[in-house]
Length: 26
Image 1 (cartoon, rainbow, N blue to C red):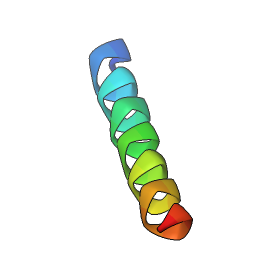
Image 2 (spheres, one colour):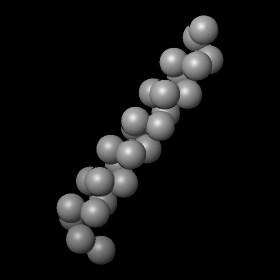
Image 3 (cartoon, helix red, strand yellow):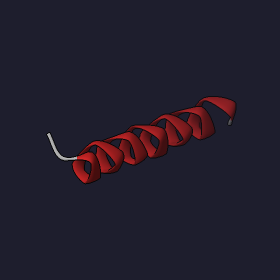
Image 4 (cartoon, rainbow, N blue to C red):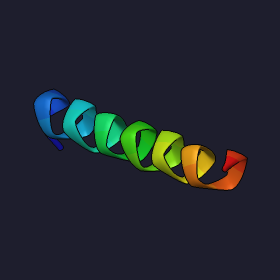
């Protein structure tokens, strides 16, 4: 597994998680 793809997936998970928190707080 390439380091770049691993970082890309990590950023995607963080982005999705922060989006869920944003919806939950409303």
